[in-house]
Image (cartoon, rainbow, N blue to C red; front, top):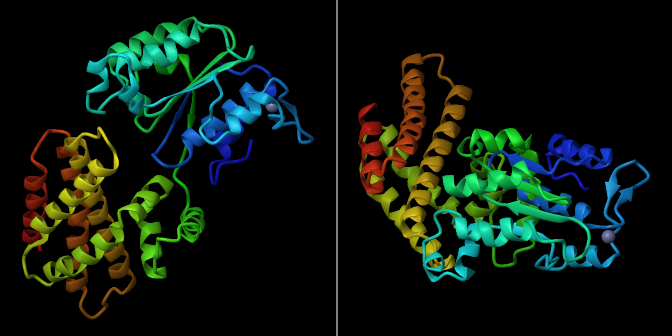
Length: 362
Ligand SMILES: [Zn+2]
């Protein structure tokens, strides 16, 4: 198994389990979004599905790469019949229309039953193992999790289940205790930068100047998913829009248009998101957009904080203190607003409040 960029320890745990020949049947891969959890699960799946998997020269069990199972696992859309990837989007293809028409806020129990529980108790179509990967497993509701629990308690032979999640605390303790848990960490900036450079080089339609690229790397804060999102939606342009307004505020000119501008950017994002992702919930897209705005405000503040502490003015420590206070306050307000997002406060109100309180703290 190739090491996922920067995830050596997580990969090591899984590879050691494969090498030992006593692979546990249920795993939780948890950690921030966009750091390679699902990709890792798929790489382990490929090894588990290969009937000829054996240790290479370094003793690591690897897939043969040439049998029919490997060809299927390597095919463009992973058409291996014993590899089941459960994602919330499957609801769109469910037999039951009411499940089909629901907005994609969770993984409905019907989807879990059709794509995991039922096939888990059937024999493997290629007479070897079966692998199930549940992406965003935190989206399983309580009934879904309880249904899954029974399968985890008495797993059918040759069945492996990987729950991938960025919010492990939303899984029942009884589920967690039956799984081996593998933590994934944030990637370092250098790793993210290398990835972003390659990614941009491969996409002709994207033209990202060097300073914007550096901004994307900082904004990503160790997550490739976050970097990809910033590029796809050009969040670096948000920063260019907001930067001068925030600077004006820092000079004591009040909140100005910061609140309404942030709301506008969030709306535009949500609209684009819903256009690109059929069946996406506008409400969820809106929240996600506000979350990105808050992430961006936090990033702007951290950067300014860094600049201020680098160029502290020994002659006028008062000014330095005032600026430090302002940027720290921005970080706090963004974090508070993020917490409030869960409580159904109107996003526009939330962003307006943030701007007003922030300007007042000056
Ligand atoms: Zn093979």
